[in-house]
Image 1 (cartoon, one colour):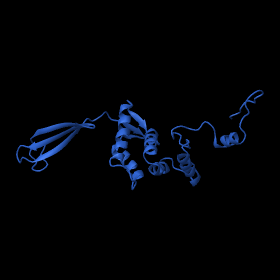
Image 2 (image 1 turned 45 degrees about the vertical axis):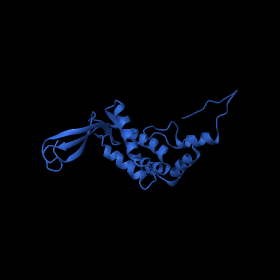
Image 3 (image 1 turned 90 degrees about the vertical axis):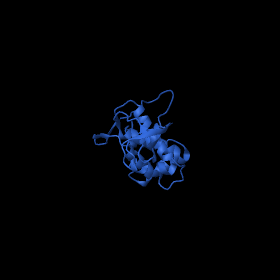
Image 4 (image 1 turned 90 degrees about the horizontal axis):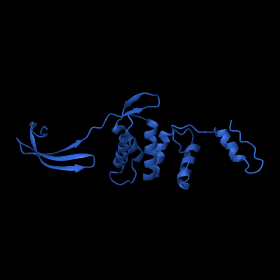
Length: 187
């Protein structure tokens, strides 16, 4: 380890401690006696992200952290909350044992954690991630947050079972239950 002050190639370890995801070492240069700290972290196996257009690129924690920070910008959150969310998501991705993860799965993980952390940050992230086409869809998501009911928060990697028109038709005319029940035609 080169000394950051004099660039001498050798140093000795004064103290080592386990930290969250690695080892913190306090070092002293053997030439100038300056002290500095290094952090050692295991490099996990490469994880690839499958983009919407089916391209694959290596997972980049900085991109994840940047997106979460933008959503949480100027929010009164506890110190380190954003980093903890990113750490939890990254740990979950690597512990899943998968080599390739779709971006939609990562986005859903971010959405779940932001919803528990801060509703404004959640809505900010959702407005970009879900690509709301109109104010009505955004309002439905906000209303679902307020009432505590599940809104349109389905996984974006999952298609709906019924079309919007069929859902409206069923809401207006629910099928009758009991005796001579007509078969429900979902086509």
